[in-house]
Image (cartoon, rainbow, N blue to C red; front, side):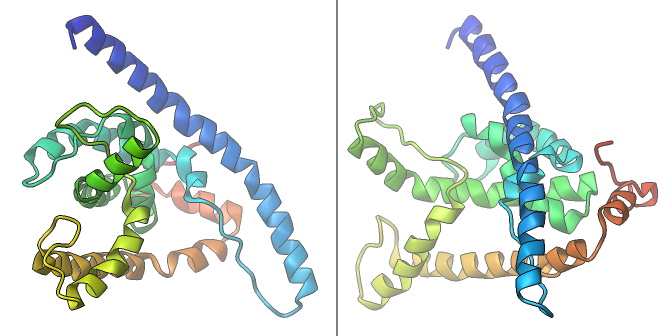
Length: 238
């Protein structure tokens, strides 16, 4: 790109990064009353039982600590992508949804921006490697539907973590069959990746496993007062 195109791209990306989480936040907030009503309805039908209604993580898009940590991550992500050994992914459009990765950091950090930024950067490292791993498959899928991919380049996204599960379960099967090649990767390396992925994933789950019940036990007023507790260096939207 020439200098003018670089400026245009920067302004466009900045506008998307500003508007996208706001629009999603407004949309998801509309689901909260619906979920509350549904929870009351189910509880009335099944007396003596407690139900939790799960919503998409995008409902946290308007959460100020999450947006703050995402702003920090966005500034570091391109440099991190260049420095990571073996990484082949340079995030661009994905920076507009950095908050989606930050959802992993929002719960365990409890609104602490510094701690949240550190957790989010760790998640970003994993997502960059996942994106590089999934690039051949994403590119093949794009070409199947007619997308023109420049020669020597690949298409991918840092939000491929959910897509990796089918491949994760195929790895042990292919390894046990003695396949000399697993999606172009060394079988031994892939089986190591398989176990490392499971350890990291369930380790993160263990870290936040009690958070849904803890948050659900608080009233909205208690939760807001907790988030405004300055002794915990917490910031939240007014």
